[in-house]
Image 1 (cartoon, rainbow, N blue to C red):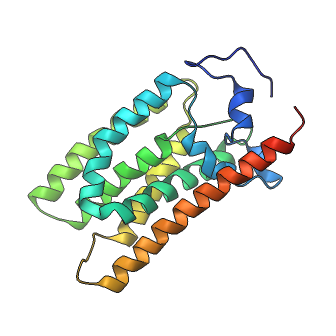
Image 2: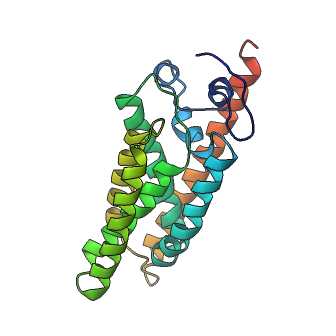
Length: 204
């Protein structure tokens, strides 16, 4: 892996690797924290700007229907599974970005549309199937990690199918999801700590 002349609009590969990009050979030797950190890194301002625009569009709907705790778990699992699939599919290609998790949010809405038959389910399914088509077409562009997107979509759909919508009268069930969300946050913080410790001791 070689470094290049990066900029705020287009960070070089070495910088992304140093800060926790998904990279199969590094993950294979024990740096599994990269499966987490990669989802919070972006290749430049345009990359993060596009993903944040999509998150603002998708996130509010998912949060409203699934609640904050479930959304955190869906987002986390989708991102990690996306980069895990990417590691298997394209192990030697570094990858970063929130798009695996964003595909997971789309998958969560598709799961909801299948659970709820009728006009509402049909409407949600039609809207988010278009999302999938547009985003998968975009995934065909050079340099886009299709494997992470597909893995994220699968993870979001599966996690949302398991989670279901909040049952506010069932305090035990809701507390379990709050604990699961807290665990996801702790794992994320721990992964960035591992990244920092690795970076601090890596040869410069």
